[in-house]
Every structure is written in structure tokens, then in C-alpha cells.
Amino acid sequence: MSSFELVVVADPEALATVAAQRVVAAIEGKERFRLALAGGSTPERLYAKLAADARIDWSVVELFWGDERLVAADHEHSNYRMVRRALLDHVEIPAENVHRIQGELPPTEAAEAYQRVLGATPLDMVLLGMGGDGHTASLFPGQTDGRGVVVTESPVPPTGRVSLALDVINASREAMFLVAGSGKAERLAQVYAQLQDESQIQGEPRLPAAMVRPQRLSWLVDEAAAEKLPRGGGE
Ligand code: 6PG
Image (tube, rainbow, N blue to C red):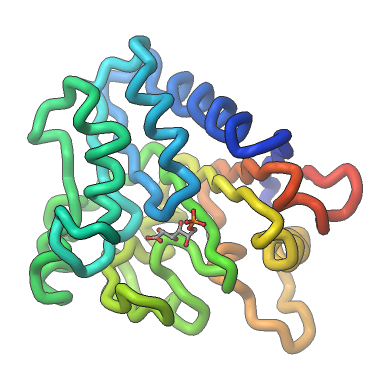
């Protein structure tokens, strides 16, 4: 069973601070850094911190998205729009380094176009969140098959999604989860138990978030999300 790191921090602000420190450290000194961003709301604070961190040489960063909703780039639910407002509008990053998923295209076209841009070079870091159902990126329970870039169906709107598949995420050098809030506590405890025990827990399907097993795996969680973890969590 490969190990993983669990870091419990006080609150969402601390989560963003610790995550930003790790992203900055990972980029430092690199000539090229392929970074896939998480969507949703948790990482917004992190992206704002990265935008304000003058140590980052954005010219070496190739930005990708772990997943996208099949909506226009200026739609309120677009992950690209969230990142543009929190990060891209505030940093000097070459346009050719920003590889958004074209959510305005028909699903298969969007996935195929993104697969071409992504290529086969492993990602250096993948930032991920975890949904209340244990999904990550847009890999929902029962929708974890496929390779490369896949089209999935979210149980909550916007339903059409394009996502990195598990093989791409697990081929990355490192994946870092950011999870905050007591609403995630129950599910996080379940994922944590599954991460501890590679074997199939009796009758319990493995949750997508527990299937993420890259070379290096870290879970950054706040106290509220960690409240149901075994005391002293961490590997
Ligand atoms: C998305 C994300 C998704 C997200 C989780 C957690 O497109 O919504 O990729 O996987 O990370 O649903 O979302 P929150 O951070 O909003 O709780």
C-alpha cells in the first residue's frame, strides 16, 4: 500500500496558506511545470494567494484544469471563469500556457480537443477537491472508467462534464486534495478508511477520491472536515 500524507489545518484560510506554500515550493526552480487546477469553491482562496505571490515565475507554468462543466467560459458555473477571476486576471502568464477545457463545445469534441492539448506528458501536480459523494474532478461514483480525458454526467447541474480520467491523475508526480468544512467530514472519514485499506472493504464500493494514487499524494484538510477522522490522523 503506498503511503500518503494527511495534513490537518485550522480553517480554510490556513488550508489556502499551506497549499500555496506547497505549490510555490513545487514550482520553484523548475523550467517547466504542468499544473492541473481543481474546480469548485474550496480552491478559490488558494488561487488568490498564488496570484499575489511574486515568487512564482508564471512563464514556466502550463495551466490545465482537472475538469470543467460543459458551459461557456463566462458562465457562472465555469471552472475556467472561477480561475480567471481569482488568478489569471492578476498574473502575467502567457496565453499559450493556459489550456482551458472548451466547455462550449459538444462533449466529445471538448474531450478530444483537450486530450490533444494535454498530450501524454505526465502532469507535475494535480489539485483536487472532494465532493460530498466522494467524487473528485468530475469522476463521480460509478463513473471512474475510461482513460485520458472523459465525458461524465454530474448528478447535480451543470450535468455535462469533461474530466481527467484516473489514469492521467495517477500518472502525475503529485496530487494534492483540498477539503474543508464539516459537510465533508463523514465522507472524508470513509475515503480515509479506504485509503488505509487497499483491499475492498466488504460491500463498500471504492469512492473515486480513494482511487487517486499518484506517486505522491497529500490530503490537506481543515479541522471541520477532519472531525470524524481517527484521532491523530495522518500516515
Ligand atoms: C468541480 C470540481 C469538483 C470539486 C468538488 C468539491 O468542478 O466541481 O472539480 O470535483 O472539487 O465538488 O467542490 P467544493 O470545493 O465546492 O466543495
